[in-house]
Image 1 (cartoon, rainbow, N blue to C red):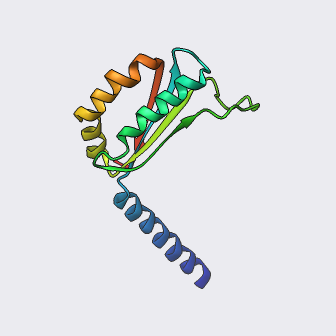
Image 2 (cartoon, rainbow, N blue to C red; image 1 turned 90 degrees about the vertical axis):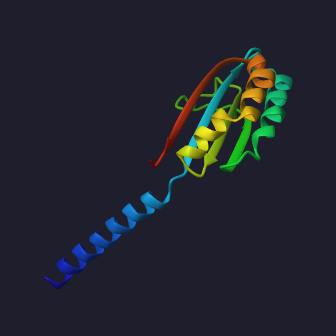
Length: 127
């Protein structure tokens, strides 16, 4: 009986700490997967990566990573794209501000979009 009560207390504390952590962690991830106009063109990849790095210091950005695809022999891995960008924001409001910022819009329209054929974006986090 004592072990049963200890187990219930442990599970209750674990569940409570998980809920509190989820409430405290309001980070949002923004993942952008990019297929360039010239698929596999190393110079275009580098141009996209270098231009994209100009967005690293915008407010609300916790971390930002941009790099080229890693080819894979595993069929489960999608390696058909050229470049991916992962940005972690403090919260959903920071993502919204980032998307509306003039610096982001200018970078997209003037430098990045001319290089791009296709884009897929994923946003996720605790809201």
